[in-house]
Amino acid sequence: MFKNLAVFGLLTAAVFLSGCGTLEQARSAEECQSRVRDLNQKLTELSRQKDELSVRNAELMESSREKISDLEKAKRDLAESLNSELNDYKAKLQMTERGLVITFMAEIFFDSGKVWIRESAKPILRKVARVLNNDVPDARVAVEGHTDDVPIRHSGWRSNWELSTGRSLSVLHYFIDECGVSPQRLSVNGYGEYRPVASNDTAAGRRQNRRVEIIILPSKISKVRK
Image (cartoon, rainbow, N blue to C red; front, side, top):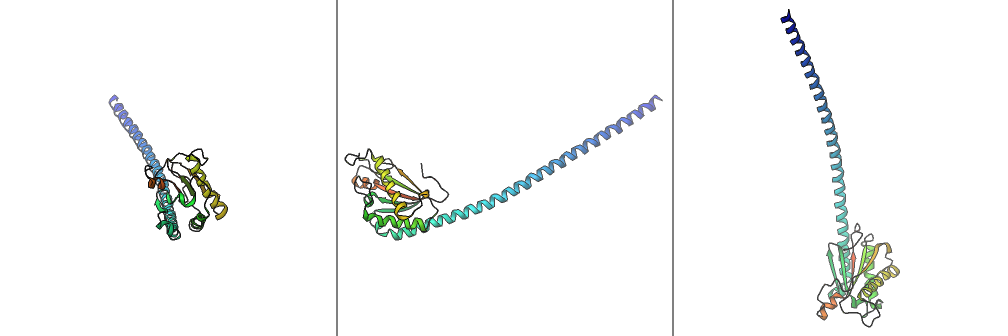
C-alpha cells in the first residue's frame, strides 16, 4: 500500500512539474512575442525616420546646388561688370568657403585717411549692387574694411579700427541709400591692420592690405568668419 502511494505521489509530482514547465514556456513564448512586436515597431519607426532623413538630405543637397549656382552666376556677372578693375589688379574675385569675396583696393573708393566714397567709385558700387539685387537677392552680404599698419596721425581717427569701420559703413550706407539693397541683408566689420594679406614691410604689401571686401554669403549662413 505504501509502495502504491509513493508511486502515485511521484506521478502527481511529475504531472505538476510538467504543468509548471508548460506554463513557464508559455509565458516565455509570450514575452518573446511581445519583444518581437516591440522590435518590429521600433524598426518600422527607424525606417520611417531614415526615409524622412533621406528626403531632407536630398532637399538640402538640391538647395545647396542652387545656392552655389547663384553664386557662380554672380561671379560671372561681376567678372564681366568689373572687367576694367580686375584687369588693373584693383579688384579681385574669389569663391571661398565663406562665399563669393569681392576685394577692392581702398584707393578705388577713398582718399587717404578718408571715409567718403569718391564720385568716381560710385558706378563701381552700383554694378556690384545690381548683381546683389538681381542674381542673389536672398543672400546675406558682409562688408569688411581693412587697413595697413601705419598709425593714424593726421586724419583725426583714433586708430585704424575706426577708419576701417567707417569705410565699410560708408559702403553699406551707399548700398542701402542709393542702390536699394535691403538693410536686413547687410552687416559690417572693421578689422584695422589685424588681418593683413601681405607684408606691411613694403609699399606694395601695404597697398594690398588697404582694402574693402564684400562677401556674398550663401542664404543659409547668417554670420561671417570669426
